[in-house]
Length: 159
Image 1: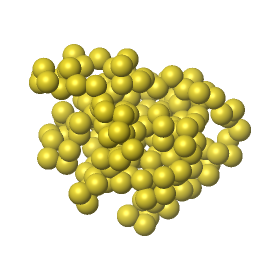
Image 2: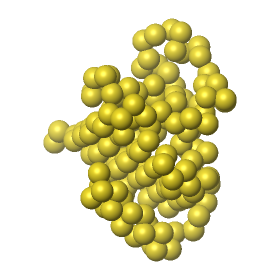
Image 3: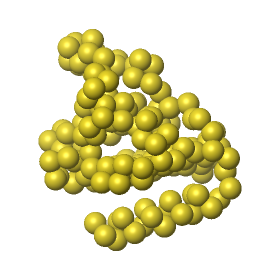
Image 4: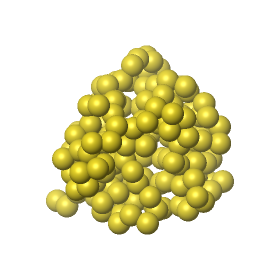
């Protein structure tokens, strides 16, 4: 985990030094998310409870999506250091860091409903829908769950 954390710290430093202006990004809010892929009707009708949003289901979350045009969408979140979060969307030339990124991410994390026991394909499908990255040609995701489990997910579009 130390080498993974080191790699993300290096990525974070590179992203911070790239000179992109900090702007609000258009991450979906829980009310904007389509639940068409969720089969359980109870989950469709349940809005995330704002009091639940203060506790993340993940201790760390690292997402990279690459699109056919070469642009990337990246998320780095470390619950152990609450302000250590970044959302960088090269498609829109935007990034959020610190509390602004955490405020965008927590409702999305809760909305995914992902657990370490969930099938990897189903979990990736949820992430790609919730984070609006369905058109990505490659998705790499590492999640460290609050219960101590770690799962790596990888999606690569077939040519």
